[in-house]
Length: 103
Image (cartoon, rainbow, N blue to C red; front, side):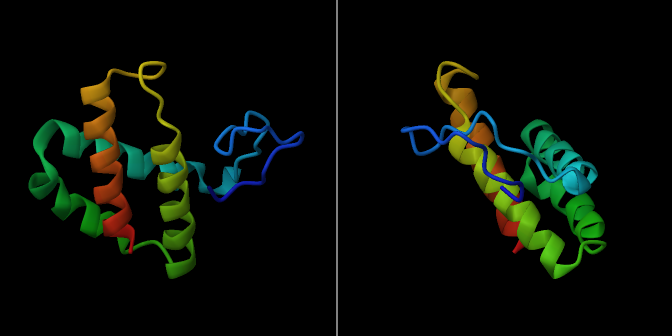
């Protein structure tokens, strides 16, 4: 994501348990994840209007960093560790939707 890679590095390419998040982005990441949750509950068409209104407040640089955060999360959702296969598939799809909104 937009944070700093952790040390030591691990052999698994996506393992980074010591990563340091960019705490300046936490409120914006929270907002994006709330929109992802809303889109899961009501559908992307219904959630799109609120997303469009909220995302206009982000600079292109912030939007790019937020997109990287969403990609980081999407790539690290584990099945069955974090959630079941179907839930993970839908969650990743809606994270992809948010990534598109940030572009």
